View 1 (cartoon, rainbow, N blue to C red):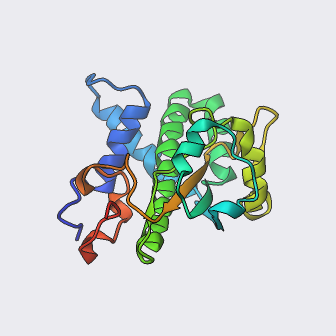
View 2: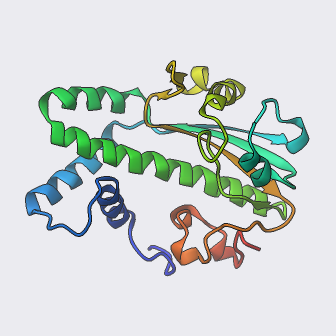
Length: 223
């Protein structure tokens, strides 16, 4: 049974998130489109091979440079830094390419489904980081990725190298620092001795709620 503080099922969330990624603004949706959306969510779940790699470093021993004021503020006071990389694998890219030739609408819908799914996998990974930190009396900042704020996208290469993500996950970079497979995400999470601002104001609206087990222990990641 779902926890009583979770407002909606994962299936409803998937549907809503797909509509958001598609730019839906309360337009009427035909039953046929509803069925196609459901089918593409199911297809994505069938072909995706979610995989994760993470490493944790003492904040003063991070083996890569993270330039920019925004990431410096984000990690200020952190005692550890967690680096994450998540991918859905190459089969999703292959299916997107196939659909581009035979079913353009299907390609758009599958792309939205895969975007939702990879973000969900990163949420799962971040929830585990928070759980591990809470078990040690520590607190996390929200995840930060290359390209956010003034952290340049070209940090991707160094971050992936530190994680050995090419060998472990099959992730490579294009000349413009875009990841292949395309449905891949990297993230940086600071681990702090005190609760951090900027987190969801309540568990009911937290994007990590589906994967969080802290509430059933009578605590939250906000302290």
